[in-house]
Structures are given as structure tokens and as C-alpha cells.
Image (tube, rainbow, N blue to C red):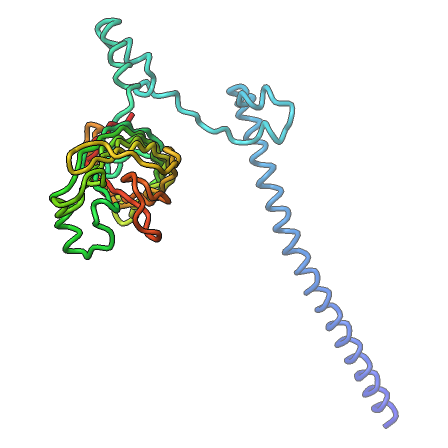
Amino acid sequence: MKMYLKFVLLFTLIFFTTENNFAASSENNDFNDELSIEAFHLIEQMSESTQLQLQDNIFRRIFGSRRTKAERVSRSQRHSNRPQRYTPPPSQSQDPQSHSQRSSGASASSSNQAIRNEPKPPLHTSLRDQYYAIGVWEIGLSVGTAHTITDIAENKGLGFSDFTDYHTNNYNFKFGFFTRYIMNEWFALSLGMDYANLSGQVPFGENLPENVPFRFTNDIFEFYAKTELMLPVLSRSPFDLYGFVGIGLFFSDARIFDIRDRIVESNVDYSQVQPVIPVGLGFSYKLPNGLRLGYEFGWRNTIFHYLDGVRMTRDNYDNYFFNSLKISYSF
């Protein structure tokens, strides 16, 4: 019985010892397998690079050096191994000398080159660009009619209908010169001079006594500067609609006559040079050849009572206005 128990204990001890050794050996085998796989890949890569280097060295020894120009010139190994870019040669179609060489003669080549260097006109030009220029001067002439509102004529304070009837039948002629500078699409500055002969007479004055003012004439010379504000709606067309306001001076020389057409002397002293404020409206049309045609209505406000040589009212000043046809040339 004792021998049997000894044998069982010995067998059990041998069995557990063998199992522990087997587990430890299996763990070592797994670790060794992982190391062997990594080592195998590393060895394989090294063998491939070594094989490529060996093949490259063998190729160079047999066929000579395959180094590029950059490898031979550059001292940097990084630079020398960089791939080179291919730069194509310049095209002869873009070389002006190739065109001149292919031409039949020097004169033909020079003419072709002059044609190539000549700027081409735009494909489309707007009407505003064709007919309107900004930053240019104009010089022109104006002709038209001159009208007065005075005491002798007794036409102050008339209604619209009576006013138009009177001035349709009673007017004189005027003319003038002007220059105009177009600053931008909104504003223009105009300087000018106008001459007009103003006149008027007492209506229904057949029974007036002698030495009583019956009619008058006045030759005036006006010098003005005015600013024109153009309508922006028409900024893309050859038409211009504008309003203006300015300041000026006029020289007055009134002569008074009685019913017998004799001069009536005035006993009032006044200055013949007076200020005037021109205001009005106008429109114009620009032609393609640089000419501009237009019409302008200009009212002249004065602070003067003796435009007709006499003063019969204390409140209302004498005034006058022009209807003008204008023509100008831009340069």
C-alpha cells in the first residue's frame, strides 16, 4: 500500500512539472514566432534594397555612370537625386524674329510688326462714350431773343397768358459767346458774354404829353459764370437736360424817348454796372463730330430799377430774360 501511494505521488509530481514546462515553452515559442516574423520582414526589405543596390552597381560597372547633369554638378546629395523637370524650348510662333525671318522682305516684316503693335478699337462703344466726353472744353455761339419786364412797358405782374402774348410780339435779338468745361457727368462750368438790345414802350400812349417817357432802348453787355447741373437719367445718351444758376455783371445804357421821339433826360444818378443772377433750364444734343446743339431759357434777376431809365414802382425790380439757340464745339 505504501509503495502504491509513493508511485501515485511521484506520477503526480512528474505530470505537473511536465505541464508547467510545456506552457512555458509554448509561450516562448509564441514570442519567438513574433520575433521571427518581424525579423523575416526586416531581412526581406534589407535583402531587396541590397539586391537593388547590387543590381545598380553591377549596371553602372558594366554600362558606365548613369548620373544626371544635376548629380554631376550639384554637391548636395539631396539636390542631385531630385528629379529634373523638362522645360520645352520657346515656340517660334511667338517669336517676332521668326515671323520677320519667314517674311519675304524687310519692308513687309516691318509693316506686319507695325500692324501687330497698333492698338485695336473696342468691339463695342456705348453711346455715352461716343457722344459725350468728360473733362473737355467747349467753345460756342448763342443767338436768340431778349425780353424785358420794366415800368415803361407796363408788363410787370402779368398772368401767364398775358405774359406769353406780350413777349411773343415784343422782343429783340441777342447774341453771345461762351466757353464750357464738363467736369463730370453731373456738373459743368460755363463762362460767357452776351449782348442784347432791350426796348419797350407805353401801350396805348398816343395821348401822352411831350417830355414824358414813352419808350426806351438799352444796350446791355453781360458777363457771367454759371454752374450747370445735368440730369443723371440721361447720362447714357447724347441728350443732356440741365438747370443752371450763376452770377454776373451787366453794363446798362438806357435812353428814354417821348412821343415825338425826342430824348428825355433823366435826373436820377445810378451806376451803369449792376449785378445779375442768371437762372434757367436748357437741353442739348451731342453730335458725333464734336458739335453740340441746344436750347436754353435764362432768366436774369436784378436789383435794379432803372433798366428802362425810370422808376415808377417801389417794390418790383426790372428784369429781363433770354431765349437762346446754342451751338458749340468740343476740344
